[in-house]
Length: 108
Length: 118
Image (tube, rainbow over all chains, first blue to last red; front, side, top):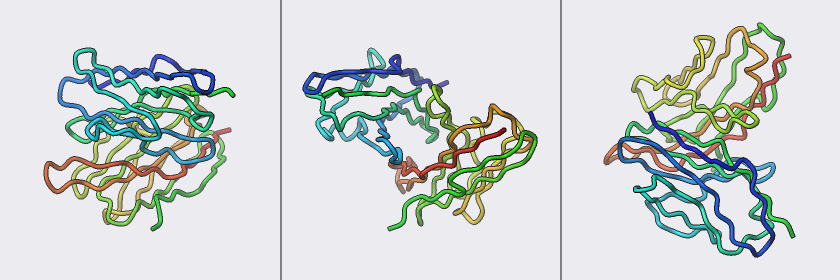
């Protein structure tokens, strides 16, 4: 069975500091990994996906199959990055599993 | 264009009553997902519809939960004999499906229905 683990429910950093949101997964097939974000009073939306290998709003995430991780990183956090972040895995059958989420707070 | 819409936005009901939650996906999106978002529990997958195929119901927590998708578009999630632990935000998402490989693309989420069971 596929599983996504986000070990930190809450993460707080100061503006300008680096931030890393951890995500580990377990899946026997070839997964696709995503990060979704939900800003205050907004809908959940896609932030980035591993197959795109792109940087969105300064965030990057690299799929590490050896460590089964897909950590989200940003070198210099901004206050507007404060939000709820969900790591998600899509299996071969298009079934999606989300982690419990990490609430990031960036303090001024 | 219009995004995913859900109704009602809020629903308060009494324990034991049945409720229906509606989702209107983005036009042309063949895949539709229902999730439950509870405080501290993250997003819990409930059910997935893909075109005319049999839905993946593996996430439904009990037989009190069911969902339909009529005409490949609008979907209704029904919860029978509601319990207090059913209180949560119910989210719907839709996406297109790639013609090659059959993988679904980015999910677009609705605003959710906040269900409160008294």
